[in-house]
Length: 151
Image 1 (tube, rainbow, N blue to C red):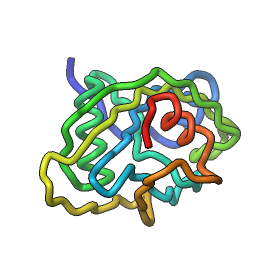
Image 2 (image 1 turned 90 degrees about the vertical axis):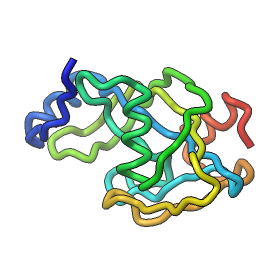
Image 3 (image 1 turned 45 degrees about the vertical axis):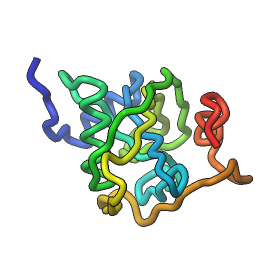
Image 4 (image 1 turned 180 degrees about the vertical axis):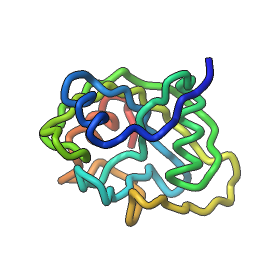
């Protein structure tokens, strides 16, 4: 099946996510430095996993590789897959949609090369590595770490 990644006008996209769940793919990127979380510049503006919606016709593992390239600027190797998880958000990055429900497939990934450089996309302003479960982590970040025995 052909992958459809065309732009969806915000008004139409808002109607979709106000009425039905959105399927997303998220990355737990782990390296020798720890597990990466990134500061989102879009709503909700939180420290979270890199991730994106799944495109129609896109295989899940292909989405994981795409997200790593688009949001982190690197190539990754998939170590494991977790989920699905369901997230219920009280806000949304699109106008006209007061909330959002996502269904998430999570990929535990690592860099393909020992030497790599993170290059964030326009949705993120900074990143950091976790080496332990910290106070104040978003509930879904903590959930993934605890559910999957990470850190």
